[in-house]
Image 1 (cartoon, protein in one colour):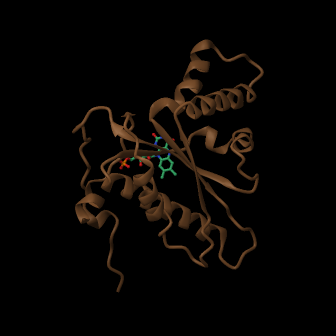
Image 2 (image 1 turned 90 degrees about the vertical axis):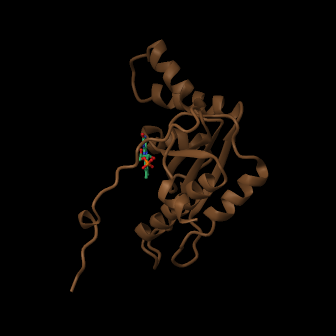
Length: 186
Ligand SMILES: Cc1cc2nc3c(=O)[nH]c(=O)nc-3n(C[C@H](O)[C@H](O)[C@H](O)COP(=O)(O)O)c2cc1C
């Protein structure tokens, strides 16, 4: 079991198949088991598959175009349209943060991060691969509006999920000395 945690890695090139509905259910159960001060459950997920990814690409393009008065080149347009097609499934994670709550907002956001990590690990355990991405579209208000995400909520990431394009093509995991990040305090 520990090996699943030690060997998990992000896979940028993903293809079919994506997890089935039954497996996705298990993955979301894992995500929902994240540590959560105050039991606020601040994590929310949108599953985007199939042609809905093309719609997301059009939202990205429109959002990117509205950031500049200069028309985007055909290459730039193609880049935005193709972005959500990098995997068969994209999960949009949003964080519903409650301001001025006794649980500080940073702790609410940390809980969302823990939930995403549970989701990534469960995806890996179930035999699929994933990559957590943000980029400027995660911080674009127009994108939030189109996805029905409330203005006060934050997009914590776009999780690309599927199967590795090249099976067995794992990158080398850099091992570092524990003394770089662990110290004993006496
Ligand atoms: C909040 C968050 C946002 C990220 N956004 C991006 C991104 O937009 N593009 C990217 O290449 N990597 C992004 N990453 C990093 C990758 O998901 C990944 O963790 C990193 O490439 C290291 O690979 P590993 O997970 O295999 O160690 C993000 C990570 C986090 C935690």
